[in-house]
Length: 431
Image 1 (cartoon, helix red, strand yellow):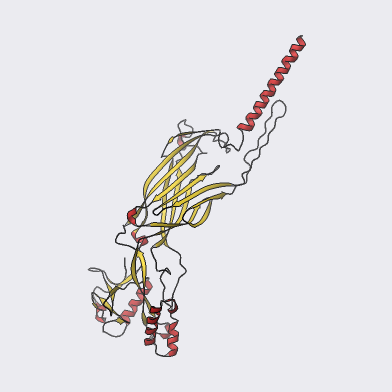
Image 2: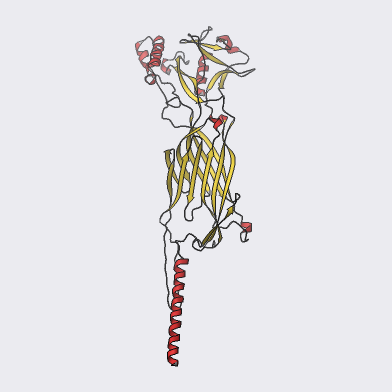
């Protein structure tokens, strides 16, 4: 009877240890798994002080163009006729006339004559507050394992600027780079990683073992971008162990409100056709280009920056790289500020004219035989300087005429004695 009771007790204890061992194994396999995102997670509150985002730099540049020069064959039919007539008058000899037909002259910076499209490169700096002084305080909101897990950046331009975003060109972070060339995008950047995350063994009352070696072969940074007429939106979501701090580079194209301007391109004879080593002006070629409208252009282009983020704070468990034992607290935050994109000087075209600035700015103009008057504006300093050299070294003292145009200064025909004006004339920027 006693032996039976002992046997029964022994069987009960055996079952107890089997159940205990099974529970312990279950705890290991469910609680110590490297595929878990965290041990526990709670949302705490909104805190806008944990993350800072600034527009580190913004730079405008001309839209890339393959047009570098032009000649007779690139002109319109009417301009070709006018140019041939000029060459025929200057070079009646057949051989010199044919040689002059190959004369090259500068082309507009853009084949379409549109200078209102600009490429804008912006660099955003994203950082989190690192409060190491309060690292072990119960109320601290920073640990070495913290990261920014989700982020949206919205940049909006005021309607009064008459600026419009037209397309994305490129997006880049420290994890990789995307070529976009579209209005919106939704892609992922591959984070290169190939390393074991966890390897563990355990034993009790004999041998109870488990070996988990999980390798991260591909992790991604999820990206989304959208664009409206006067706003852009960047959305980033970091996956496992990927922090969104760092610099983000965004390339896009925007367009200014257009305004027409008339640009002059002087055409000079090739060196072999010039006389007395002096530049010989064959004629003027005109082109109408579209530039940003200046009457409504402010001194600074200011945009509204809004940032929304989710901050992942590891309250405990941050001593290990594995995330399965982390007790996580989430905080949300919103930042809003005004940022300066660029100034008036950054987007004005670099045109040049000839004249003087004192006591007031007066420049040379052209009057057509039809009576219409046009400003004399050049697309480059070299064109304006070469025209001024020709003007100051030309022979003759009468009014300067170039084809059907008469050169004017202060509203009267320009003559040689005006070159000795005390104020002097020189090359000046138009704007």
